Amino acid sequence: MSETHDHSAAGTFTVRPFQNADAPTVARLVTDSVRGHWTYRPEHFRESADPQRLRLVALQGAEIVATAHLSPFGEATPDALRLDLAGAGAAFTPLYLAHLAALPPGFSRLLGVTREDFGEQMEFFSAAGFRNAWQSWGAHLDLISFDFAAFQPLEERLFLKGYETEQLANDAPDADWAALSALHQRGLADAPRNPTTTPDPLSAAGLREMIVREETVFVVRWRGEIVALTRLTPEGAEVESESTVTHPDHRARGLATLVKAHALEWARTAGHTHAGTGGTVLNLPMLRVNTRLGYRVERMWVTWERQLS
Image (cartoon, rainbow, N blue to C red; front, side):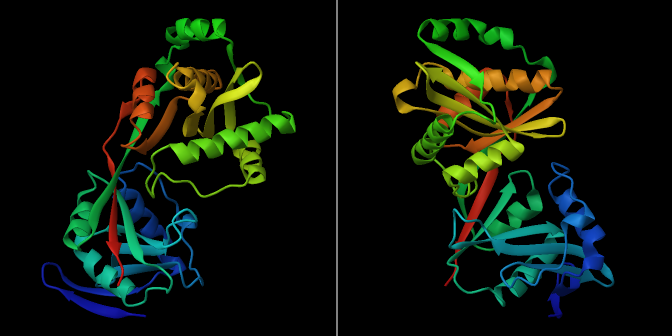
Protein backbone atom coordinates (compact mmCIF):
# COMPACT_ATOMS: atom_id res chain seq x y z
CA MET A 1 0.00 0.00 0.00
CA SER A 2 1.31 3.41 -0.97
CA GLU A 3 -1.21 6.13 -1.64
CA THR A 4 -0.91 9.83 -2.37
CA HIS A 5 -3.57 12.14 -0.91
CA ASP A 6 -4.00 15.81 -1.66
CA HIS A 7 -4.90 17.89 1.37
CA SER A 8 -5.33 21.48 0.27
CA ALA A 9 -4.58 23.03 3.66
CA ALA A 10 -1.14 21.48 3.90
CA GLY A 11 -0.13 20.04 0.53
CA THR A 12 0.21 16.42 -0.54
CA PHE A 13 0.79 13.45 1.75
CA THR A 14 1.98 9.99 0.81
CA VAL A 15 0.54 7.24 3.00
CA ARG A 16 2.28 3.88 3.28
CA PRO A 17 2.67 1.05 5.82
CA PHE A 18 5.13 1.48 8.64
CA GLN A 19 8.62 0.08 8.11
CA ASN A 20 11.11 -0.82 10.83
CA ALA A 21 13.40 1.98 9.66
CA ASP A 22 10.62 4.44 10.60
CA ALA A 23 10.76 3.47 14.28
CA PRO A 24 12.90 6.37 15.61
CA THR A 25 10.71 8.98 13.92
CA VAL A 26 7.46 7.28 14.94
CA ALA A 27 8.67 6.98 18.54
CA ARG A 28 9.34 10.72 18.60
CA LEU A 29 5.96 11.57 17.03
CA VAL A 30 4.02 9.38 19.45
CA THR A 31 5.93 10.68 22.49
CA ASP A 32 5.33 14.26 21.35
CA SER A 33 1.63 13.54 20.76
CA VAL A 34 1.09 12.62 24.42
CA ARG A 35 3.05 15.70 25.51
CA GLY A 36 5.73 13.52 27.08
CA HIS A 37 3.21 11.88 29.42
CA TRP A 38 4.85 8.62 28.36
CA THR A 39 8.15 8.09 26.58
CA TYR A 40 8.21 5.71 23.64
CA ARG A 41 11.40 4.16 22.29
CA PRO A 42 12.12 2.87 18.77
CA GLU A 43 12.04 -0.73 19.97
CA HIS A 44 8.36 -0.28 20.84
CA PHE A 45 7.55 -0.11 17.12
CA ARG A 46 8.00 -3.06 14.76
CA GLU A 47 6.41 -4.25 11.54
CA SER A 48 3.55 -6.66 12.13
CA ALA A 49 2.16 -9.42 9.94
CA ASP A 50 -1.08 -9.44 11.95
CA PRO A 51 -3.86 -8.18 9.58
CA GLN A 52 -5.74 -6.76 12.59
CA ARG A 53 -2.80 -4.57 13.62
CA LEU A 54 -1.73 -2.04 11.03
CA ARG A 55 0.40 1.06 11.44
CA LEU A 56 0.56 3.62 8.66
CA VAL A 57 2.78 6.66 8.23
CA ALA A 58 2.17 9.85 6.29
CA LEU A 59 5.03 11.52 4.48
CA GLN A 60 5.28 15.07 3.19
CA GLY A 61 8.06 14.90 0.68
CA ALA A 62 10.61 12.55 2.22
CA GLU A 63 9.70 13.38 5.83
CA ILE A 64 7.39 11.29 8.01
CA VAL A 65 5.04 13.81 9.61
CA ALA A 66 2.30 11.64 11.13
CA THR A 67 1.33 8.07 11.96
CA ALA A 68 -1.85 6.11 12.71
CA HIS A 69 -2.26 2.71 14.30
CA LEU A 70 -5.35 0.51 14.13
CA SER A 71 -5.68 -2.52 16.40
CA PRO A 72 -8.26 -4.45 18.45
CA PHE A 73 -9.24 -2.38 21.49
CA GLY A 74 -8.92 -5.29 23.89
CA GLU A 75 -10.47 -8.53 25.11
CA ALA A 76 -13.00 -6.65 27.23
CA THR A 77 -14.29 -4.79 24.14
CA PRO A 78 -14.07 -7.45 21.41
CA ASP A 79 -16.23 -5.62 18.85
CA ALA A 80 -14.09 -2.47 18.73
CA LEU A 81 -10.97 -1.32 16.94
CA ARG A 82 -8.80 1.41 18.44
CA LEU A 83 -7.46 4.23 16.29
CA ASP A 84 -4.38 6.06 17.60
CA LEU A 85 -3.04 9.13 15.81
CA ALA A 86 0.15 11.15 16.26
CA GLY A 87 1.97 13.91 14.45
CA ALA A 88 0.70 16.61 12.10
CA GLY A 89 -3.08 16.94 12.42
CA ALA A 90 -3.41 17.84 8.74
CA ALA A 91 -2.30 14.30 7.85
CA PHE A 92 -4.82 12.53 10.07
CA THR A 93 -7.60 12.50 7.47
CA PRO A 94 -5.60 10.71 4.72
CA LEU A 95 -4.29 8.25 7.29
CA TYR A 96 -7.83 7.60 8.53
CA LEU A 97 -9.21 7.15 5.02
CA ALA A 98 -6.46 4.68 4.21
CA HIS A 99 -7.32 2.67 7.32
CA LEU A 100 -11.04 2.72 6.44
CA ALA A 101 -10.21 1.27 3.03
CA ALA A 102 -8.58 -1.77 4.64
CA LEU A 103 -10.58 -2.48 7.80
CA PRO A 104 -10.29 -6.03 9.13
CA PRO A 105 -13.63 -7.86 9.30
CA GLY A 106 -15.54 -8.66 12.47
CA PHE A 107 -15.61 -5.25 14.16
CA SER A 108 -18.60 -2.93 14.56
CA ARG A 109 -17.07 0.30 15.87
CA LEU A 110 -13.98 2.45 16.09
CA LEU A 111 -12.76 3.96 19.35
CA GLY A 112 -10.20 6.68 19.90
CA VAL A 113 -8.74 7.78 23.23
CA THR A 114 -7.12 11.15 23.81
CA ARG A 115 -6.67 13.66 26.59
CA GLU A 116 -8.78 16.80 26.35
CA ASP A 117 -5.71 19.04 25.92
CA PHE A 118 -4.31 17.00 23.00
CA GLY A 119 -5.78 19.45 20.52
CA GLU A 120 -4.97 17.86 17.15
CA GLN A 121 -6.52 14.50 18.11
CA MET A 122 -9.56 16.11 19.77
CA GLU A 123 -10.22 18.25 16.68
CA PHE A 124 -9.86 15.29 14.32
CA PHE A 125 -12.23 12.95 16.16
CA SER A 126 -14.86 15.67 16.46
CA ALA A 127 -14.61 16.64 12.79
CA ALA A 128 -14.58 13.01 11.60
CA GLY A 129 -18.00 12.28 13.14
CA PHE A 130 -16.90 10.41 16.25
CA ARG A 131 -19.06 10.72 19.37
CA ASN A 132 -17.60 11.99 22.64
CA ALA A 133 -18.88 8.91 24.43
CA TRP A 134 -17.02 8.52 27.74
CA GLN A 135 -14.76 10.55 29.99
CA SER A 136 -12.10 9.28 32.35
CA TRP A 137 -9.81 10.96 34.84
CA GLY A 138 -6.19 10.53 35.70
CA ALA A 139 -4.47 11.77 38.84
CA HIS A 140 -1.01 11.87 40.40
CA LEU A 141 0.25 12.08 43.96
CA ASP A 142 3.62 13.32 45.23
CA LEU A 143 4.70 10.45 47.48
CA ILE A 144 7.63 12.36 48.94
CA SER A 145 5.22 14.57 50.87
CA PHE A 146 2.65 11.85 51.61
CA ASP A 147 2.02 11.56 55.37
CA PHE A 148 0.34 8.39 56.61
CA ALA A 149 -0.08 9.96 60.07
CA ALA A 150 -3.16 11.80 58.77
CA PHE A 151 -4.90 8.41 58.41
CA GLN A 152 -3.95 6.89 61.75
CA PRO A 153 -7.15 8.07 63.51
CA LEU A 154 -9.16 6.30 60.78
CA GLU A 155 -7.06 3.18 61.24
CA GLU A 156 -7.59 3.23 65.00
CA ARG A 157 -11.37 3.60 64.67
CA LEU A 158 -11.56 0.73 62.19
CA PHE A 159 -9.25 -1.47 64.27
CA LEU A 160 -11.65 -1.15 67.19
CA LYS A 161 -14.37 -2.46 64.87
CA GLY A 162 -12.31 -5.49 63.90
CA TYR A 163 -10.62 -4.30 60.69
CA GLU A 164 -6.91 -4.92 60.10
CA THR A 165 -4.78 -4.03 57.06
CA GLU A 166 -1.87 -6.06 55.73
CA GLN A 167 0.23 -6.63 52.64
CA LEU A 168 -0.75 -9.96 51.08
CA ALA A 169 2.28 -12.20 50.68
CA ASN A 170 2.95 -14.03 47.44
CA ASP A 171 2.91 -17.31 49.37
CA ALA A 172 -0.44 -16.60 51.00
CA PRO A 173 -2.76 -19.63 51.37
CA ASP A 174 -4.87 -20.66 48.39
CA ALA A 175 -8.00 -19.66 50.32
CA ASP A 176 -6.76 -16.06 50.47
CA TRP A 177 -6.14 -16.00 46.74
CA ALA A 178 -9.60 -17.41 46.08
CA ALA A 179 -11.16 -14.74 48.31
CA LEU A 180 -9.09 -12.05 46.59
CA SER A 181 -10.25 -13.19 43.16
CA ALA A 182 -13.89 -13.31 44.26
CA LEU A 183 -13.67 -9.76 45.63
CA HIS A 184 -11.92 -8.61 42.45
CA GLN A 185 -14.75 -10.04 40.34
CA ARG A 186 -17.31 -8.41 42.64
CA GLY A 187 -15.60 -5.08 42.08
CA LEU A 188 -15.70 -5.51 38.31
CA ALA A 189 -19.41 -6.20 38.46
CA ASP A 190 -20.21 -3.26 40.74
CA ALA A 191 -18.00 -0.43 39.54
CA PRO A 192 -19.10 1.88 36.71
CA ARG A 193 -16.75 1.47 33.78
CA ASN A 194 -16.22 2.46 30.17
CA PRO A 195 -14.15 0.75 27.44
CA THR A 196 -10.99 2.55 28.52
CA THR A 197 -11.31 1.62 32.19
CA THR A 198 -12.53 -1.97 31.72
CA PRO A 199 -9.63 -4.40 32.22
CA ASP A 200 -9.21 -7.52 30.15
CA PRO A 201 -10.84 -10.55 31.84
CA LEU A 202 -8.62 -12.67 34.08
CA SER A 203 -9.21 -16.07 35.61
CA ALA A 204 -8.41 -16.58 39.28
CA ALA A 205 -5.15 -18.25 38.27
CA GLY A 206 -4.35 -15.46 35.80
CA LEU A 207 -4.98 -12.77 38.39
CA ARG A 208 -2.75 -14.51 40.92
CA GLU A 209 0.01 -15.01 38.37
CA MET A 210 -0.04 -11.34 37.34
CA ILE A 211 -0.02 -10.09 40.94
CA VAL A 212 2.89 -12.33 41.92
CA ARG A 213 4.81 -11.35 38.78
CA GLU A 214 4.45 -7.57 38.81
CA GLU A 215 2.12 -6.16 41.48
CA THR A 216 1.77 -5.54 45.21
CA VAL A 217 -1.53 -6.09 47.01
CA PHE A 218 -2.81 -4.76 50.32
CA VAL A 219 -5.97 -6.12 51.92
CA VAL A 220 -8.26 -5.34 54.84
CA ARG A 221 -9.50 -8.27 56.91
CA TRP A 222 -12.54 -8.40 59.15
CA ARG A 223 -12.59 -11.44 61.41
CA GLY A 224 -10.05 -13.03 59.09
CA GLU A 225 -12.12 -12.43 55.95
CA ILE A 226 -10.71 -10.26 53.13
CA VAL A 227 -13.22 -7.44 52.68
CA ALA A 228 -11.18 -4.79 50.82
CA LEU A 229 -8.15 -4.72 48.53
CA THR A 230 -5.97 -2.40 46.52
CA ARG A 231 -3.43 -3.38 43.86
CA LEU A 232 -0.34 -1.41 42.85
CA THR A 233 2.11 -1.87 39.99
CA PRO A 234 5.59 -0.42 40.65
CA GLU A 235 7.06 1.18 37.51
CA GLY A 236 10.41 2.77 38.20
CA ALA A 237 9.94 5.83 40.42
CA GLU A 238 6.14 5.61 40.09
CA VAL A 239 3.47 3.21 41.30
CA GLU A 240 0.20 2.85 39.44
CA SER A 241 -3.07 1.84 41.08
CA GLU A 242 -4.75 -1.05 39.28
CA SER A 243 -7.94 -1.42 41.31
CA THR A 244 -9.41 -0.78 44.75
CA VAL A 245 -12.45 -2.76 45.88
CA THR A 246 -14.53 -2.91 49.08
CA HIS A 247 -17.13 -5.61 49.69
CA PRO A 248 -20.66 -4.09 49.58
CA ASP A 249 -21.34 -5.12 53.18
CA HIS A 250 -18.39 -3.05 54.41
CA ARG A 251 -18.62 0.10 52.31
CA ALA A 252 -18.97 3.70 53.55
CA ARG A 253 -16.60 3.04 56.47
CA GLY A 254 -13.36 4.35 54.95
CA LEU A 255 -11.80 0.97 54.11
CA ALA A 256 -10.84 2.00 50.58
CA THR A 257 -9.13 5.11 51.90
CA LEU A 258 -7.27 3.17 54.59
CA VAL A 259 -6.07 0.28 52.44
CA LYS A 260 -4.89 2.63 49.72
CA ALA A 261 -3.14 4.84 52.29
CA HIS A 262 -1.25 1.78 53.55
CA ALA A 263 -0.23 0.89 50.00
CA LEU A 264 0.97 4.44 49.33
CA GLU A 265 2.98 4.48 52.55
CA TRP A 266 4.60 1.20 51.51
CA ALA A 267 5.45 2.72 48.12
CA ARG A 268 6.92 5.84 49.75
CA THR A 269 9.15 3.86 52.10
CA ALA A 270 10.22 1.63 49.19
CA GLY A 271 11.62 4.72 47.45
CA HIS A 272 8.91 5.49 44.93
CA THR A 273 8.30 9.20 44.46
CA HIS A 274 5.03 9.42 42.54
CA ALA A 275 1.74 7.53 42.41
CA GLY A 276 -0.73 7.47 39.55
CA THR A 277 -4.36 6.40 39.34
CA GLY A 278 -7.47 6.95 37.26
CA GLY A 279 -10.94 5.78 36.32
CA THR A 280 -14.23 6.77 34.77
CA VAL A 281 -15.80 10.05 35.88
CA LEU A 282 -18.89 8.00 36.84
CA ASN A 283 -17.00 6.42 39.74
CA LEU A 284 -17.55 9.25 42.22
CA PRO A 285 -16.70 7.19 45.35
CA MET A 286 -13.15 6.57 44.09
CA LEU A 287 -12.79 10.20 43.09
CA ARG A 288 -13.59 11.13 46.69
CA VAL A 289 -11.15 8.55 48.08
CA ASN A 290 -8.32 9.84 45.93
CA THR A 291 -9.09 13.43 46.85
CA ARG A 292 -8.79 12.51 50.54
CA LEU A 293 -5.45 10.85 49.84
CA GLY A 294 -4.10 13.98 48.16
CA TYR A 295 -4.16 13.03 44.48
CA ARG A 296 -4.31 15.93 42.05
CA VAL A 297 -6.65 15.30 39.11
CA GLU A 298 -5.30 16.03 35.63
CA ARG A 299 -7.09 16.84 32.39
CA MET A 300 -9.82 14.38 31.42
CA TRP A 301 -9.33 11.56 28.96
CA VAL A 302 -12.01 11.26 26.30
CA THR A 303 -13.05 8.05 24.55
CA TRP A 304 -14.53 8.76 21.11
CA GLU A 305 -16.76 6.25 19.31
CA ARG A 306 -17.92 5.81 15.73
CA GLN A 307 -20.10 2.98 14.48
CA LEU A 308 -18.95 1.08 11.40
CA SER A 309 -21.53 0.32 8.74
